[in-house]
Amino acid sequence: MTDSKKTEDTIAELKKEVTELSGLALATGVILTQFLQTICARELNPQGSVDKIMNNARDGIEAFSKQTESDPAMTKRALEAVQQYEDQIRSVLRT
Image 1 (cartoon, rainbow, N blue to C red):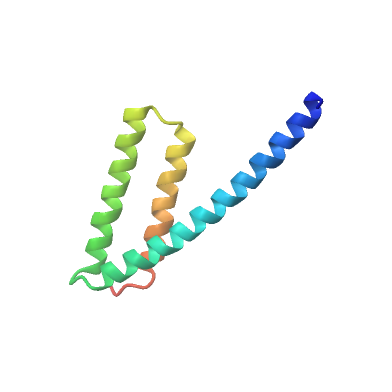
Image 2: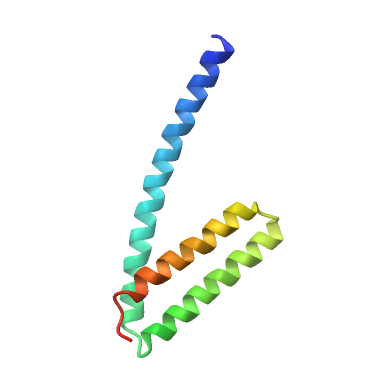
């Protein structure tokens, strides 16, 4: 097999893997959001519960990133994801 063919096969394999991981991430995000909405909705102060959960998540991401010297792009995307989850969760909770 030529180097070009190996490269094409590797790229195709990586594209398939990224697609599969994207699907897994989507399903995980939807389930997590539904789960957290249900939990927070049962609290006396649902918005306060969201604050606590999301602030802990942000702190955890920052600590992990610092400890492992993670790629800043990964950290940025993780923090953006927390904001996305927060927005989705808050959208269905009473104020």
